[in-house]
Amino acid sequence: LVILAVGALALTHLSLSVAVLMGQWTAKTELIALAENRIESVQARAYEDIDPGVEQDTVSVRGKPYVRRVTITAPNSRTRQIAIDLRSASETLSYSTFTYVSAP
Image (tube, rainbow, N blue to C red; front, side, top):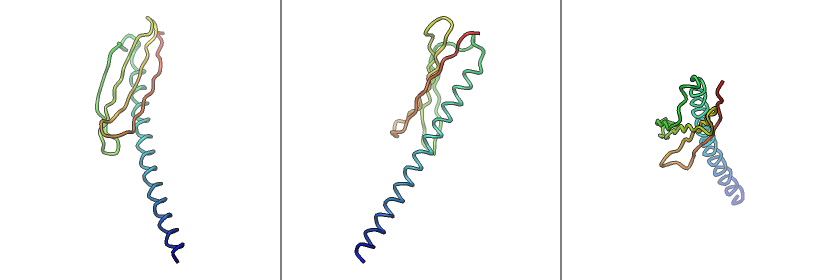
């Protein structure tokens, strides 16, 4: 009977752990989607309108605020690097990515 009770408690703990991990992966998926959507919106601009600098806004993921920072740099005169960084002051979950755009 004791073995059965310990097994039931272990199964409950495992179920809760899986539920927490599922929530974290759902949030990570939302962060990735927000970053990719922002990259696509910058890439959709005319090359002449992609000016080096930093743009920042706040987005919400599962009710928590994240700062989305877009950093555009010019490694050379015909290329722009677009870097996206999503971070929260209170969460350990973050996401960063980058891509390049070349002049036509």
